[in-house]
Every structure is written in structure tokens, then in C-alpha cells.
Length: 402
View 1 (cartoon, rainbow, N blue to C red):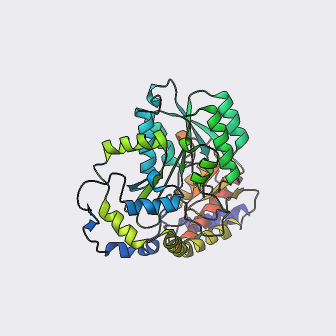
View 2: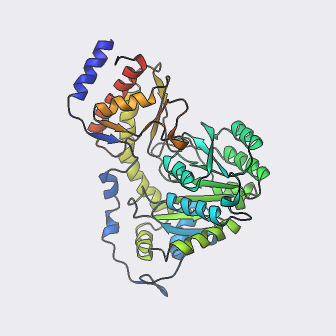
């Protein structure tokens, strides 16, 4: 058996592969779905607003209404920005770090943020940039482990917030239940009235299989009397064009004022012409959902290919997530071999996200979590990449390369 695995690996290795599944990017066919944006002609005026000029720092009112519909929040609580939810998240964190609600985070002895794991590497980089210590809590199939969250809140001081991806969590795909989100609000409100919960809802409309119903975070925050603790962001980064879409933020009270202050220093004015193009392209939330169904038809088969290959090896080697949306699959090895698996894949010409990337400081304490991004490459290449992956898992698990 070991000889056949090694021989198969040598055959794969000798075929001169060059396949990259490190990042969750749309493929070109997905981008083609939005090509109409490239040719939409817009008038330079929208009512009394000259789209070509400065002004409208919170975004065009029509774009903010679209964001309000997406996030289920009042339009007066919406900012329409640019680029990505990550950019709005960074601006949010920076505003609290520099200025704060009652005290700037930079003036605390040791500000800390709670990060569910596995998580998004760019979130972790943001906190490293700001020198904010990251504390981890595990995820469950319903969201954050409430028991672990309560434990860490009881033990630690100077925790200023929590970040999460509540729908199709990056990279393992969890969808938080309403009850889980309400429990999060209950605990953090008791910890501090200024506690920030940043919901990066990057995959809000990215279902590709039937997905558990989830209430708007804004409605849940309102129900929990926690609107002043909640900040919600989303974007069109993987809806229309990477870096060329719109982003949206919902916040209230002092949080909203802080973010306005930060953006007033950083952004001379939003790209109103691009906003106008998008509101011409998407009339309302229903048209966005129709558009995302076209994305789903392209994405779904790729996940099915990955699932089929991963199912072909015994569960003695590990297990994998089965997300109903988003852009990633997480494979968890039964031995501490994630680093080794990724190195073996690289030697065969298949690049995978570095081991540890889904944990703060790039260190997976169990060295067993691997993020797979199946969307960007062609289906034939994906099948080959997954074959390399499962072969590498078997080789590393059974220590066949001695």
C-alpha cells in the first residue's frame, strides 16, 4: 500500500504541476458576471449631487439604502465605502486605537481582542499591526464556543473586543445561530459597556447550498439592547470585482461617530461614480441574490469535486468541513502534520495556504489545520490538486518519506 501511494505521488510530481490554491479568489467566469459594470454609462449628476466632485462622505444616499437593505439596518446608520469589508474593519479598529469611546486602546496597558479560531489571517495581521494581543476561542457548529468565551472573559482584563465572520466563517464555514449571537452580546455587555463586536459579514450573500436561516445581526443587537456594541461590515469584493466593488458598514452611537472621524482623515471622498454604477447594476437586495445564484452555479461544482476527493481517503487521516457557502474548506489532520503536508504538496507543484495562517501569530498549536481554496482554478486542475493533497496527507500521516 505504501509503495503504491509513493509511486502515485512520484507520477504526480513528475507531471510538472504549477497550481495555486492559497487564496479564496473568484475565477474569471465569476468576474464575467459583472462585466456590464465596465460599460455602464452614468450621468455626472444624481439630483443635486455632482458625482465627479468632492462631497457625500458617507456615500450616496441610494448606495447607503442598498447597504441598509443588505444589513437590515436604518440608512442613517450606514456608511458606503470602497474596496472591502477588511478596509472598513481596519479603519474601525484604528479609530478605536487612536481615539476610543471613553479611552483610546493605545492608552490601555495591554489591550486584547478575542479571535475565534480557525480564522482569517488578514484579521490577525490587523491586530499585530496595532500591537493588540489576540486571545483565541474555538468555534462550534453553531458559532463561538460560549463556554470558552465566558471563561476567557472571566479570566482576562483589558479585553476591548471580539471579531468574527458570522456567516460561512473563514475558513471552516460555520454559520452562527441567532442564539449564539445573542449569547455573545449578553456576555460582552456584562464585561464592558464599550466592548466592540466586529462582525465581518464578508460572505453574507455567498450561499451555494441551502443554508441555515440567520437573522440580521442588527436586529439581534437591537433585541439584546447591544446596538452600541455591534459593528457590521460587508462588501461586494467577491460579488462584482475584487477591489472595485462597494463596502458597507452599520454602526450606532459613538462607534459610528468614531468611524466617521477616522474616514474624514483618511478618505477625501468616496468614489461616487462607482457607487452610481453599482446602484444601476443592482436595483435592490433581490437583484443581488439573483446575481449570487449565478456565482453559486459556478462555485458549487468545485466544492463538490473537492468533497468527492476528500471522501476517498479514510477518516483515520482526518476530517473536513462541508460549508454551504463562502470560499474555503478546512481539513483537520488527526496528527500534527499540517506543515509537513503543505511542504509535500509544494514539492509536487501545488501551493496551499501556509500552515498556521488560520491562527494568530501564524502558529497553529496543534499543527493540524489546513485551509483549502477551491474556487480560483479550473475544475480539472482542482481535481489534480486535491489528488496531490490527499496523497500528501497519507504520506505525512504514515511517515512514508523517510
